Every structure is written in structure tokens, then in C-alpha cells.
Amino acid sequence: MLNPNVPAWFEISTADLDRAVRFYEAVLEVKLAREQMGGNSMAVFPYGGKPNTSGALIRAEDCEPSVQGCVVYLSVDDLQPVLERAIALGGDSIVPRTALPGDMGYFAQFIDSEGNRVGLWSPK
Image (cartoon, rainbow, N blue to C red; front, side, top):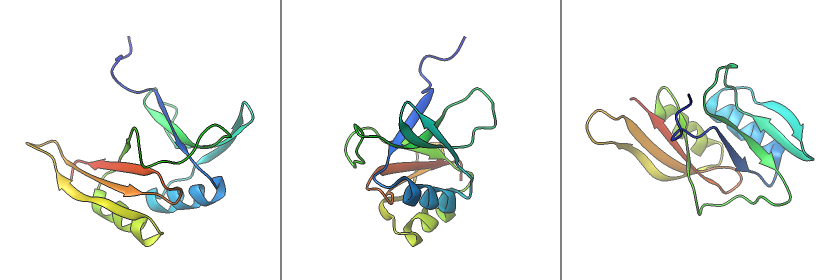
């Protein structure tokens, strides 16, 4: 049985999918897979074919980038270099690398190339 508290999928809205793909591929040092789904253009984050949480950048008529609302936190091995790449590529840091209580790791937030507030989490 799947854990009902773990998100299955997320979508990060884009105004310019090509720009967003370039931004996220450079920031996260990954290759996103382009897809069309129901008339919407998407770029899917890699997930290795394993059942776990993943998501996509999406360009759809009914979706707009936003700094308001839910924040998606992307897991990375080491948060600081990823945050630095996001800023170097035009993103804005809104919460710097911050330690979580106990041994829970670190988080940060930035504004991406599309105007979305996005979080990062890492164990170090």
C-alpha cells in the first residue's frame, strides 16, 4: 500500500516552457523529458522509473506561475551549490540555506525563471 501522506505528482507552472527547461536543467544538472499530455506541453523531472514522487514543468492555459500557494521542495544532495546556480541563472533567493531542528537537514527557497516560489531540501 502506498503512503497516503506522500505526494504522487507535482506540476510547476511556466510562462515559457523552453526557458524553464533550460533553467531547471542547469540548476539541477539533470535532463527533463519533453511530453505532450492532454494538449499541454510538459517537461518531466527524472525519476528513474521507480514508484516515488516526481513531477513536471507545465505550460497550460489554466496554470500561471506564482509565489503564492503551495511550495514544492526538491530534494538535492547538497543544497548550497544548487541554490547558487539558481541565483546565477536569474533566480532570486528568498530564504537562504537554513538548518532545520535536530538532524532534519537544511532548506532554502528561491524564485525560479518563471516567477514560482520553489524550495530545496538537503541532508547537508
